[in-house]
Amino acid sequence: MRHVDLLLTGGQVLNLFSGELERLEVAIADGRIIGFGDFPAHERLDLSGRVLLPGFCEGHIHVESTMLAPGEFARAVAERGTTTVVADPHEIANVAGLEGVRFLADAVPADLLDLHLMAPSCVPATPFETGGAEIGVAEIEQMLAWPSVLGLGEMMNFPGVIGGDPDVLAKLEAAAGVRLTATPRA
Image (cartoon, rainbow, N blue to C red; front, side, top):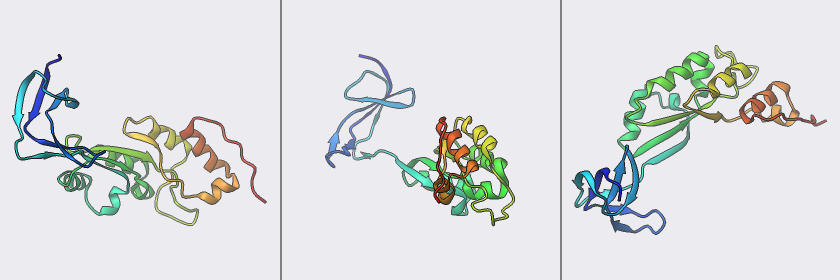
């Protein structure tokens, strides 16, 4: 049996499938849970009287809408059990473009939170806005190459999707890696 870095003993683990608390040892190697049971370990930590829960994942948020600096946001949600966030930095992109998105990507301490981003798809949100920045296909392609960016953010321009707007379709194509064809509605 493989030696692990750390074995958590004596605690209870919440089984998310049954809703029951189970007394299990938790084996950790290279910073990740690799199994349950009595593994040979370099270090053991007794968690008697404690319950282990999985971290929460926030699947869609606009961090800048919290009105907190990114590091403060990370501290606030991490201490409440959130370990992973997928953010659509649409608002900061409206004002500061790629530089704002990069700021957000770099400003969250990695030891507190796994922050993943979606490339903002509608900057500005409408042609009637004057927020200060524009993000086109080239910028989306650039963001999609960043390790923290998972894909394209929410496409708010549904009239452009339905109507086959070439700029909107080009953004979708960049994210999907496929060529789309559209027949505009009459």
